[in-house]
Image 1: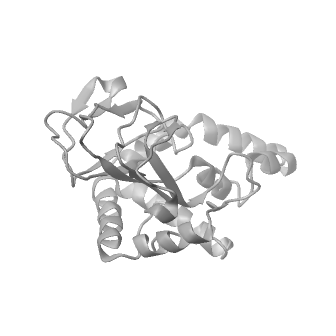
Image 2: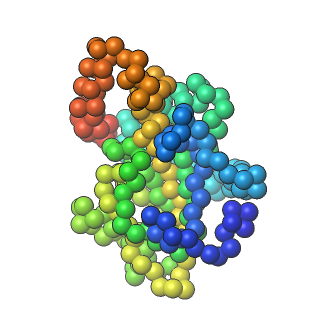
Length: 235
């Protein structure tokens, strides 16, 4: 993984002290429109090899399948929004054709997260986390959901889904000699807003909206909590 700049070194960021790289499509942080994360040529070539490997493609399909099984309405929303965005803007390159998540991160080394929320993800959406490497999951690497006061064993090879923007979460520590790698799958909330606004930002939409459109937009925002509950239902 040296092409990604990973040489066994870790870096501090708001989710913890480990090496991470994010790939895929996002919108936010000053972007004028949805776009792919920008990387060096070497990083892009390596990511192409990683995402097209049989093992990772199978993992992406599995994550998509599980979301469809447990949250079918949410899966439909993710699938339709990503498809619409890519159809509207052919320059967008999705990670996998058969996975509804717009982005994915690779986390290496001692990938143990500190307490955080992923505030830029869809509030009522789900984030998928695949747990890898080899460590004693009875002693460390547990998934902590702080708001629910849950500490969950998270063995290597397992996949967890959680509303990462809603609940604060982290991992318990590992011993210094142990390694934990992970891969996450998620979609930024800005992508859903862009699609809902008929392919424009909130600012641009409100600037050109009629009084009736503004009222409808405000009602939609006020009722998002109910929309989220309906989408989380599997009935």
